[in-house]
Length: 159
Image (tube, rainbow, N blue to C red; front, side):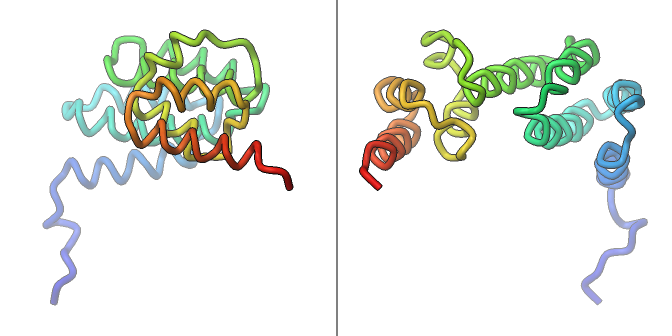
């Protein structure tokens, strides 16, 4: 039989699955406490991975919702000591700014991670021609520059 028994699975894998399930169903009022508890896990890499997945899911769900700002502030208090999570949350905030068409700084976008630039050009979250133009010219990777150029071409094409 090829299926593994739960007892054969490493403990950190079971905890990871448990954390993801708990984070998916946590009430908003309890989210920060649960995140803090997850981040106290002895396996820091696994804990940060679980929180990162949760943060990406929640940020995607809330991106254009007015509740995003309060959520991001609550998140920042919990993750402020984590070298991966804090910058990722800041990039979600920048992505929100771009998605809402609010003012943004060219250098901040040009210096953003590959993840943020790729997300901005490969999803329909960002449609502003000035954002796409900057990424077509100054994107960090050829993939980002090509995708931005392609999206610009389609935006400019008459319907």
